[in-house]
Image (tube, rainbow, N blue to C red; front, side):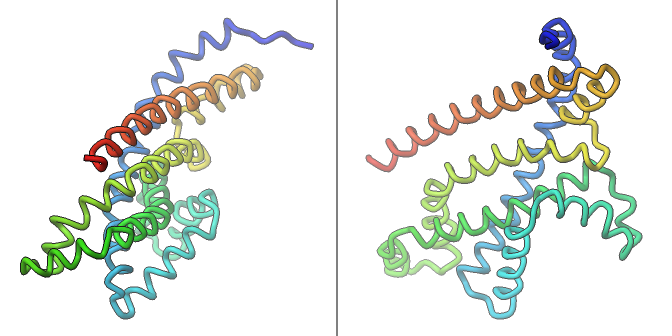
Length: 224
């Protein structure tokens, strides 16, 4: 049995580090866009806006019910067949768009549940002081819902970082893509993929520490 080539793995470290900012950048961009879209979708669901609510339900059902990889392929390879304008989108943009649409469907339901989880007395209190529904939502309900939804949303961000590994299927050279290329040229597949797995593991564990710290801070704030 061939021994693990640690020297080869150490030589790959600076190469993968070069692509770490792209991996994190795609995840961060998708997270911001997904949060905005998810908030809009959740508000439509909570308000039960006629027709729009049915469209949102279909959107959520589709993107939660189909694999992320299939969605990326549909967006990057399929849509340009129907609408040539989409052929101008590069792999990074397609990956961000795919991650945004996929995770916004999950996040919308988490935000909706968080809004509905705010005690009904909070709504009644806002009505008693003469706030409009928009004012009540912006000043009272959403801040409380954010505390409820924050740990779950951070989990989705962690999943989003892992999801960026699929971007190499669209021709994007991020960490997974770089590992694939290096492995193909050296035939050291185990070492290359083990190292990229360690990179993702370290990033996820670091975010998990942040998540636990955030949960402790929020629990203290709620206990006051």
